[in-house]
Image (cartoon, rainbow, N blue to C red):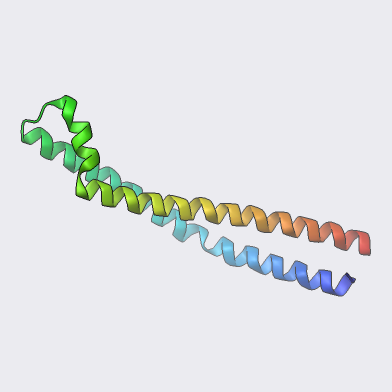
Length: 108
């Protein structure tokens, strides 16, 4: 490895961190919206079952099986996974950049 190739790799890593960082706000918004939709679906399902006079001890099980709750929970889990994967990628890119900077320092 020569200094020029390491410098180019550092530039690429910095650009990748910048691109990934630009996604943070959207992923956070998607996660929050999915959480809101899931919580709303749960609340509506609880109200529906209460109004039907179903015993309280059964409502939790019925809510978990509700179609709208299942769909909203699925969307939330997907958004949560994307959010966590994003920050794992950011950490990975930072570690790569740190390693490249160490190599650059020792080549100089």
